[in-house]
Length: 115
Image (cartoon, rainbow, N blue to C red; front, side, top):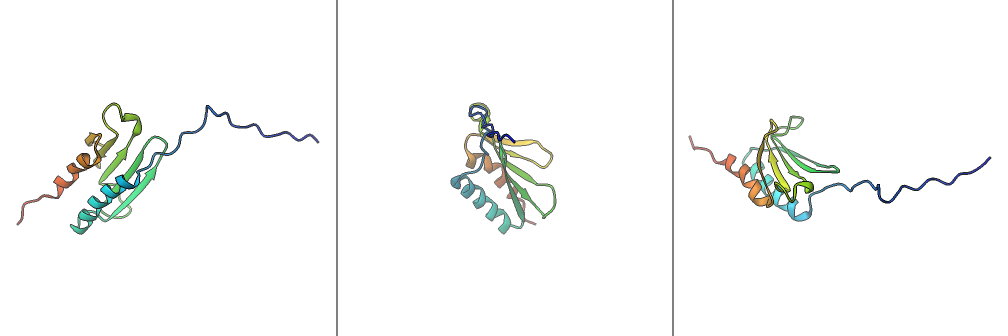
């Protein structure tokens, strides 16, 4: 019986690391999330870290489709902006390089006339 050594993975074809939100970015997102939960608008969230993007999804109810997705795509850094807010139907509500400026589009939805 012959024993073969395992073939090592080539270094140049290494799988890319996952994209994730750092502590500062999560702090900004969770501050907005806390205000919206206190206002009764949002109830749940989910975080996904994939190879090419990170997603913070906001839900009105658990086990429902997300109302909004806050996405981080590093490949768009030099073009349209690394951050985007995507609506429930998939439309991009705002895109940019500054997370706080991009999230302002969600704060405007909280302003309503008083009955």
